[in-house]
Structures are given as structure tokens and as C-alpha cells.
Length: 317
Image 1 (cartoon, one colour):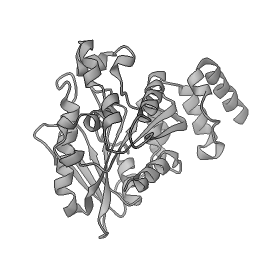
Image 2 (image 1 turned 90 degrees about the horizontal axis):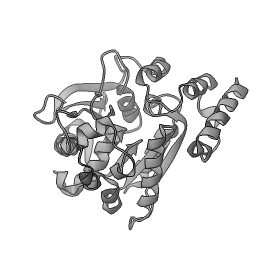
Image 3 (image 1 turned 60 degrees about the vertical axis):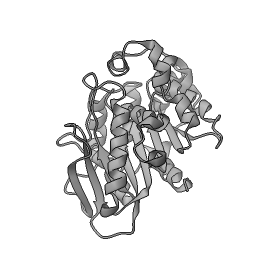
């Protein structure tokens, strides 16, 4: 099996220079059969097939030792909803991890009935000393730019005003998004006009497989639905330059088996971030994983991404 995986990985590297530049895969971090299946799926975004691999590894409700509040309102829209995860036993004030799901700007939710995702991220957060907030937001085409950034502003404001009574520390809020969620997090951080809390209200931001520069490649259908069809507006609606100028610390990551555009955007943002007065942003390329497995694996024994998140949170004063 190891030889077969190595052969397939080598084939991918031969056809994809970006993959070839990454470090060799550490064998102990992921079971060989899982690594094989992800390699077979390849550089695709396939939530159902990836979820089938990871759902058996996740906890099922009820979650022992964790209190869950579902579908709290943080704004007037139908999708202005969040879940809060806290430890059942009293604890000192904890930092807060807000998670923003993906879905290509036009789909997705914080939780689907019968699915362990994205409760898995909240459970990991509580186990590791956070209060977890799992939120959803308005979608294109009904709600185009800047609805996502506006929703992040309303969400951060709600958390800042309401999380202390739930054991969270309002001064230690981390906003994390994946894919379209990362786009909205990046838009919020990079465009201060959407901040409803002084300084943005964040201790830090975590962007997993995001898009930061709309001008770097042609827009897809979902981006057209959200950002509009006028490319002359794309530079001002991108987040790259605003992130470079933002004082908010951030971590950027991507997955080794991400579609090429996400890897390219990761590299663009990584290089651009080194122009910040504070120096290069923390960055991490996650070995072996795909666009969906990177977050479906959270709260399993594969802690490579979450180790980086914890180190980032600890590094932010």
C-alpha cells in the first residue's frame, strides 16, 4: 500500500509543480488507507465523498461535557444564526473561536442534520480551552458583495457583547473561515468600514484555503454572483492589499491537495504579507489533505492544522 501511495503521489507531483514543491508527506500523521483515498479523489472539492471518509471518525450527539446553544440570532436575516459551544462545568474566561463555513459563496451551512460537520470544530475548540461559536451568513446571488463582510461585522459585534456571560473573553476573539468562509473573514479584516467593534474586535484571524486577489485569475460563476460582473471593481473588493495594511494578526493556510487556484492564492498572500510592518504573517501548507478534509479532520487524531491554530493563538498577545 505504501508503494502505491508513493507512486500516486509521485504522479501528482509530476503533473503539478506546486505539489512537487511541498515537503514529503509525514506517514504517521494520517492512516495510509485514508491518505490513499484522498489522493485518489485528487485536487477536487467533493464534500459528500470526503465527508464519508471522516464522519466515522467524529463524535455523535449528545456531546459529553459540552453545552450547546443552537440557532441564536445575531442579526435580522434568516441566516443570521449561530451556535455556541461551552464546557458544562464552570471555567475561567476563555478565548473565543468563531468558525465560518464554506460553500462557494452561494451555498453551505454551519451544520447539516445528521452531519458531524462543523460541530467537530466546535468540540475541538472546547477541548482546547476556547468557547466555540459556529455561524452562518447570507448567500449570493440574493445577497451579493458586501453582505459577507457586513455579516462578519454583525457577528463579531454580537460575540463581543454577549460572550462574557457564556464564559468567553471578549478581548480574545479569533475569527476563522474556510474557503468562502475564509473569503468573508479576509474581507472583514481587510475592510475596516465593516467593523462595528473598535479595531475590528479581533485578537486574530485564521483563513483556511481562501481567495485574496480577485484580479489574479478569471472569476468563476459563484464569484460573479457575489462580486458582480464588473472586473473594474475587483481590486477594491479583494482583500490582499487590505490584509497587508491591517494590524490584525492572521494565519493563512492551504491544503496540499487543494485545487491549484487556492494554492496560488496562498502563495500570493504569503508573499504579500511580508510587506507588513510586523513582518510575514504566519503561514502553513497542510500536507496530504484536500480542500474539504482539512476541516473535516479537525477533532480527530490528525492535529497538524489545529496545532498551528493553537500556536498562532498563543503567539498573539
